[in-house]
Structure formats: C-alpha cells, structure tokens
Image 1 (tube, one colour):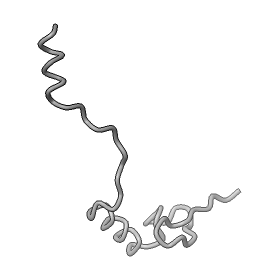
Image 2 (cartoon, helix red, strand yellow; image 1 turned 90 degrees about the vertical axis):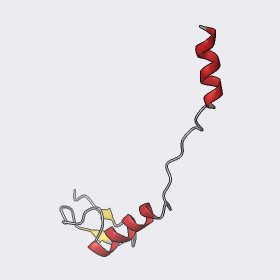
Image 3 (cartoon, one colour; image 1 turned 45 degrees about the horizontal axis):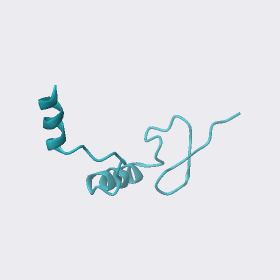
Image 4 (cartoon, helix red, strand yellow; image 1 turned 30 degrees about the vertical axis):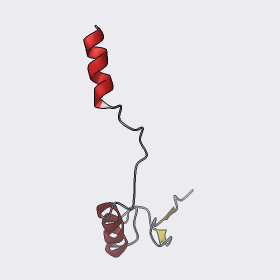
Length: 61
C-alpha cells in the first residue's frame, strides 16, 4: 500500500518523501506561510476570563 498525499494548497498528488512535503512545491509552501502571516488561518479558542473575575476569587480566599 502506497501512502498518497494531496497538497493542501493546490490538491496535486505529493510523492511520499518529497522535500517540500506536505506541499507539492516551494510555491505552495510559501502561499501557506503567507496565509498564516495574514492571519487567514485561526485556531478557535475559549475567550479568556475577565481580569476582574480573577481578582475577586483571590480576595475571597
């Protein structure tokens, strides 16, 4: 069984062990890097609790 990968940018097949893996080329790798730099990719997270809540809990104890 051969492992098949698709480039996350252009969806072309990427040979296993390719130097730019998981991308098919340096161009696609740089496009992806640019998307991170432009904040097009985001990791969802819970909103941070308000700073005031933290102080109230500390004062109670």
